[in-house]
Amino acid sequence: MLKLLWKEKNKSLEEIAVSIQNGDEAALRELLSQYKPFVKKTVSTVCKHYIDDSDDEFSIGLIAFHEAIMKYDENRGSSLLAFAEVIIKRKVIDYIRSNSKYKEISMQLVTNESETNGTLQSIEDNLSIEKFHIKKDDEKRKEEIIRFGELLKTFKLSFNDLIKQSPKHEDARINAFKAAIEIVNDRELLEQLMENKKLPMKLLEKKVDVSRKTLERNRKYIIAVVLILAGDFLYLKEYIKGRLEG
Image (cartoon, rainbow, N blue to C red; front, side, top):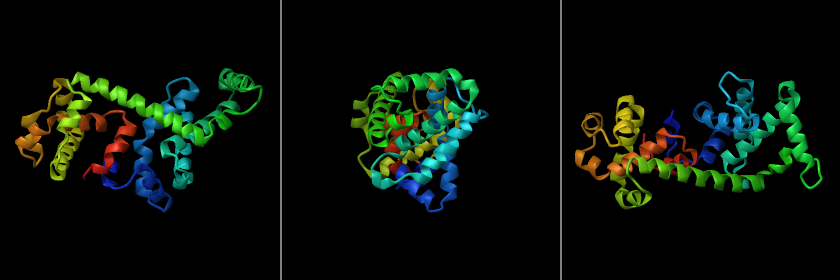
């Protein structure tokens, strides 16, 4: 699931989109698969109920995400996720308006539009990319940081700990990432970490070619990376993926 993150270690999400536009079908399949939770969450906010893989709304959202990838213009300066959210919402809103089962929500949309400065502007117009991506990106990034901070507390960690314990040398950082990736990809390691709130040191030593001394020294950093990779932290994953090694 996380393969794309370290496979494309030197590329941002936006650069991966450009590669896809240039014909990288493998990257497209990986991105569509990896960001299904993002699509579901975005669609659900419009539909006002949980969306599953089997729902038509999810299919519409996934197609819209694909469209956003192909239409994304890196020169505009917006993030791909913000751009994709706009496109997905627009497509789902179109679906709602054309589907009788969403009659109540559709009426609410029209009412809300009528009350906005006395105009009948559609929600699509209100979701202008230039304004939307700045506001929503900031809100979601802040929300993720808050959630991540709360999760760190359950492991008796803090952001200050991570700043102090961050590996100073590149080789140490690479080894820490290798250990984190091994944990994420190994169910037993991950379960032990989440249950005991500490690195499963003995088992981890057998799985990675990293000394116990290095693991001990960087344990807080390794745990933090695991929590980001294994959790629902899209923006934090984007932030750290440039250092991932595969």
